[in-house]
Amino acid sequence: MVPCPPPNPGPRERRRFANDLRITIAYLREALRLRTLKQPAAVALVLSKIDAPFQNAEEARASLTDDVLRKALGPLVNLIDQSARVSDAAIIPVTAFGFGNAVLRESAGERDGAPPESADQPFGGEPIWLLREGVAPQPFNLDTLLLWTLHFGLLDQKGGDVEAEPEIEALCRMLREDLDAGDPWLLSLKG
Image 1 (tube, rainbow, N blue to C red):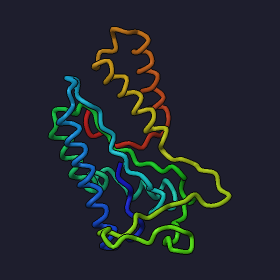
Image 2 (image 1 turned 45 degrees about the vertical axis):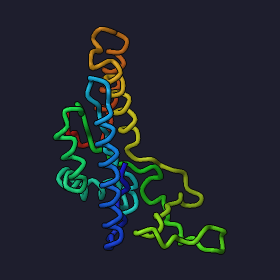
Image 3 (image 1 turned 60 degrees about the vertical axis):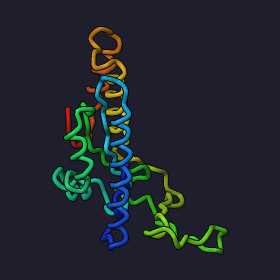
Image 4 (image 1 turned 135 degrees about the vertical axis):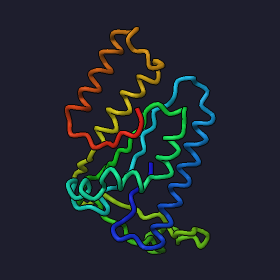
């Protein structure tokens, strides 16, 4: 999971995004290296907080084209492409709060009891987004992430051989149909 940079990111935000990518690559590479199952893994690359730089889903989709997503997450995409331990992969942009529902918390200070930002943090404190007061969350594309994860989790658990168990095969088919029936925003990378 990598958070989407804020609108008009400055050098600090771009460095933070690059650092987030490096950390995520290291964890994914190690997870794939330590995988003991013969069955390859399914990997969801989740771009979170897409409501920060975009006003609505249409604007996000228009800006975050397949090429832009591939390029922005390039090192992760490259790792997945080259790994024989990954059978299926997708990029899935999401937001938990919904477009227009998040506000950036002001810098924490002594006034609210929060510790001051540490001087040893190279990018400053992590931006904290809060749900706008009086607004209910309206998650976007989390259903896609859930259905995709359940579908490939079942396939992975059964080693890709679901035909031997009709109930599991029917459940996988239902999850796939539910995923296809909605308006899923995912970029399939592998599988």
